[in-house]
Amino acid sequence: MQAAPVRATAIPSFTTALRAVESLLMSGGQRTARRNAWTSVLEDRRRAKDRIETQRVLDRTVTIRP
Image (cartoon, rainbow, N blue to C red):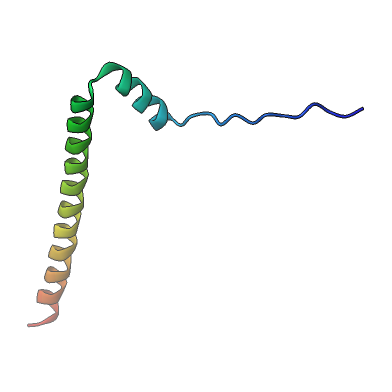
């Protein structure tokens, strides 16, 4: 007797599920605007991180040289 084949269905990630709900609730333009805004937030965070790192390097350079 042979076992029945098992079908593996991937459980959607939280992000995938959230995007599905988002697409049902929002029109395309709102969705695009929201994603653009989030991309801007992430880019601002990256730039802030870069500024902090640059400031640390400059501070170390100043303390090394008298």
